[in-house]
Length: 306
Image (cartoon, rainbow, N blue to C red):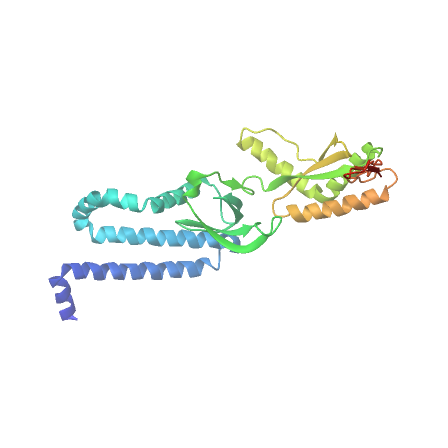
């Protein structure tokens, strides 16, 4: 043991390295103990955030430890960094931009884990936020509707500075959706309107009430119109039919399934009132072809008519 301490005294750099490694080991052990303790008290929905905070805390502590141990050498190290800084910044500009994007996401509250977003042209649910990249479970592409396609996409955080970030679920976790229905001319338009509104209240009545409460919070937070979240029906006369449009709010995760339920119930209600309300469809009228007279001219003949 005496020889070990003499070796450290003879080589100060080796002593500092040993101290740094021991310090890192202690930080890892302490953070693991804290993580094990928190797992019993933190709820499952907050466990992801707690783990991320502990990881960032570990990185910060390691950097502080290195700064304390090697404080006497920071002067020369700073000069070296200053000389090479321009080259490093140019070579790692995308990495630096992604790190800055990560800080902007944390501070600016662009989105959180579990939000549904469109980022960098990719639409999906955020399943992980890294220092350099955000991981999405992708929606759409070859799968229609708001359904997962099974593909995991990692988008550089620098995209928050380059393109718009669409968040479907941040302050207002509801979407306005529209359903169009062609109704034949001569139908009972007032009855049709009433059937659509009643069906919407039956299917999305709970969403309407909750969305109204959340929208009231939005009007207090932002300078925004106090829009109605109640179902609304509008109609437009076209060349072939009267087009009814039903506008309603729905949970952002249940847009497709709610639309299906809405269509089924509307068709059932129209079937119950088939004499007064009729669904229209595009039709084509075929007219007869007028008789044609063809004259064939042959050499040496007066011609023949058919």
